[in-house]
Length: 297
Image (cartoon, rainbow, N blue to C red):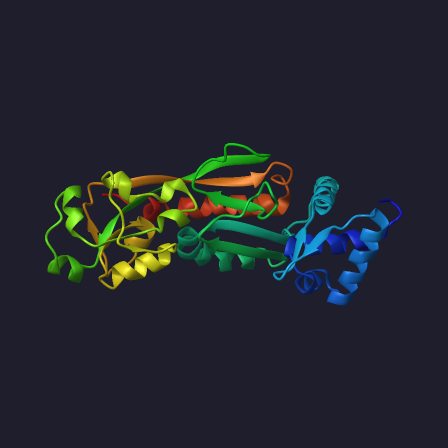
């Protein structure tokens, strides 16, 4: 490795972090052609293919993943001997994987301020119905619904949050009253598509009453929210979504459901400055939003 121009490694690192040649070129101040040439030069020198080309961009191969780990460790060591520069922010790129609801309704609202504080840092917010894996290097930081049971990961509880049943006042006025869970049997329920659940923690209805299932189903919590707001029925939402919508009313408010968010990083990169910056930022967000995540009453 010592016979190769360090700029080749910088090109590799930019591609690994961004996942696309063109975007990597913008991060590194090169055009995509130059990035591709440096990558091919590096692969020829190492005798290994470092990326698999897909429709979405470049994905690390096993050899690429090993090289990334080595370079990240070198970068970490270098940052430890750099003299501290007052006001100098972190740089590079970070991919954050979060659930659709938490990412869209909580994290996204704070992202602009975080970006303004770290102008040299590029952030990918993957807020979707599913999670990317830090252990497979699909994400640098993930906020999961449970603590991972295996893998080279570091995990800690980020926050607890509450969920409740909600419905629109118009729907409730037109339907029989709901005074206990059994009354829900005569109501139209919304929820997740069972065979598309990406985490068992999302199986809320069975926790309210065994055997209860949804009539209107979606893999998207945001779509479920819109169903409820339009008067489609009764369903479970995180309180940070349901309470924030004045067109919704709590149903059986004395029966909250509790879940937790877990902050997960790869053990080899968790101490990198950009990873620490994002982890600290997410911790600060949930501290600020505690009243939304765990509302009183």
